Image (cartoon, rainbow, N blue to C red; front, top):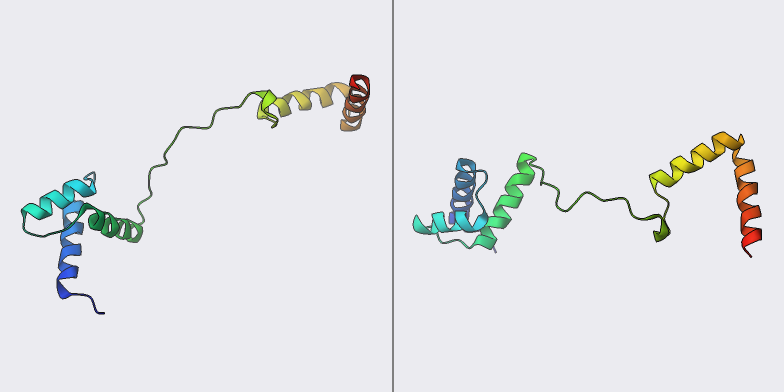
Length: 110
């Protein structure tokens, strides 16, 4: 099935509308184009814009929060834990001594 000739014009209209206002959401663009007589859905606008942004090389903003440091009892080592180990190795003189001390501590805890 071949594409309709009018699809290029619709896609071009979507891109032109996006170029006029880069912050416009697909729903707003669809409303503007529908008022001009070009029948498009916000979903179709979203598809065309995602392809257009890829072609332009526009990066999406990252979503979510910055990862916070988890408490030490979560089971994973954190950067602060590794810094403490580094200080301990510096005080004892070698990693082997720290390993021996840890093994001795484990034996005492049994």
